[in-house]
Image (cartoon, rainbow, N blue to C red; front, side, top):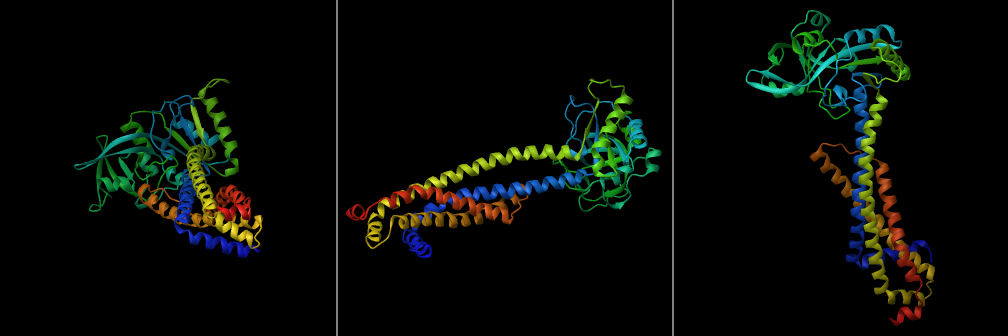
Length: 411
């Protein structure tokens, strides 16, 4: 008996017992739905990670104040704020620019995690950054209207500011033009001279559009009353020189800060590789959990298929005996039941993929987390469902094939 005829017999058997077939398919559909959502969400999350790393800048590294034993810092490229120690100075940034090879640009900055920003009777809390003009180039920060912080602004300690779209939306809404308006930052008036374009989300998930930028010297002298930096962003000439530049900066700052061998550093350097590894480690743990959930759902679906197929063998003993009596061999019976199980799983897998795609759409709208559906997801869903179906049908198929015509027809 050919495989085509056996497949036809299998499909007829499934359509004859539609309710039973539906319950078997439902068990597989649940598992494949979960698997589809997990794979699509995981691929989408990885793409988002790479977008955030690109925002961080593949050719940039960050030098942070405070050593690795201090409180963890996340900074503007990675997310929220933190306490900063007075270990980095403007002179350090200048030394890096002058003495380290393969450095294209250096942008020192100081920041306060959250400060109250006011305009008329409206107020909003936002991170405030003291920066130099180089910040725009090393961060590739767009300006929609007006101007960014200039060298003249920094030299004269001007009270001017460039603000992001989130700050504009919260303070001015749609009805007011922020350019030229005067806002209060920690009680100090600043005139808005620049409206920034959208930058998006940082590598750590922070809103990079919720920013207020003021000249660095103005921030140090008039806002924070300090002489130290939060960090220094360094842009290298070639990404292949990243490790050597990082090593050279480490050696330079150790020398400048008088750090003896074996003594903890009072600064920390973050490279794009470290950012990628950190975020992917967190994502990997989450993916593993979700895959385990999907695996459990598939196992449960396989158990459902196996049990219903066993019941089917008992109910169809007369059919099996009649087919054997007219010439069907044990291997034909076994292949038919395996084909039934595989077909149920295959069509259940298709249904699960469709439900998973719908689930991804709903999840994107609720959580604003992107899902990436590709042919890899389709292939994985169909492959896993078919394999589960075949494995679930092995024992029922063997039991059906083990029957003799006499025993089967006698029942």
